[in-house]
Image (tube, rainbow, N blue to C red; front, side, top):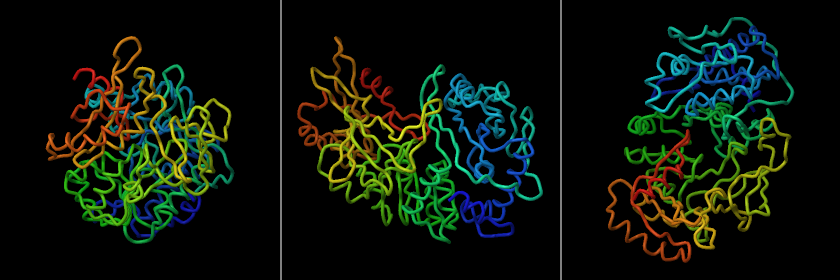
Length: 478
């Protein structure tokens, strides 16, 4: 699909490719010229199929064009996360061993003159030049590396084989970083699954900020829009663009709803747990359909569930839905979900390829549908009982509750207290929330929390998932 998109981009095509508000910031012809120019520039740098480039460029037309150009040449892109900290990033760069680092001026400023300001926003980057030559993408600021500008001339011949396409670092330590490696075949398979799920068509925009959303949408000849960062601006964007489909993370959905957003078309949400209550709120706010997407860095996407199916599910755990075409699932001896399929990652960097991916999620198959019981590492030990929070957290999402997690707090002798942190929705009355929680808490039986704390659930990471370590610290202080 990526190759087909690149081949289908034509100079002079004035149809919008990337839009903001009612304006086009890049046409399909502009994108074609950028892809050709960046491919030629990378080729002139001496890069060839199989070489690795580090990538720290904010989303936008240039970022997308550079990713497409790298794919065209058969390069491997190592995605760099500025929130990881300089020591971790240096370790990741050493492991990935890029021949060239591509960074915008903002990323380089975080590593240089703007570092004191950036640290206040919990951003820190190393000096990329310590490990590899660096080039600036886009406008250059004082102190930035030389610009890698698109060059004129014909597009270099494309690479037509398989091989590594992208490295995404997920966890690990400075001494042992952990990275997921996708091949050209696996990311293409994943994007075909997304295309068939979202069904983008020409004309109306698709709102979404990930490569896995942008490429299938553009391949369907739909213009794309990166989600506005501020909730009020996102609400205006949704109203102005009238998108046929929207992909937002649960935190983005919650803040947009709080800002009075109205939705159109089909709405998809993932990258963090998606509650039935949230999906129903999205439908009430105008969406034709609302879907929860279960995906991992290793398998994107894996399963989907529509709002009605999720709302009417009465079993224990979190129904994440039907496996998508080609995805296979099994339950390991330790209760963890294992996934395989054409869109599964090839391996972890430095390890051998493996057919099955162990997700770290406890789960089961219910009439072919996947039901999760929480992360294996989040298990709470109280008395002689193992409690998996994911089995019980969905029941806490009653009306008036925006988000809820269950955490363990050390209670001595290796035992733990069980605490539920429940975040009321804006405007909810605390007494009414507690009253609504009585019945689901009663039905938890021996897993019932020792205490319920009404407070904002801490979030962390790029996808703003619940930060369970921070939640446990909050529960311990309460």
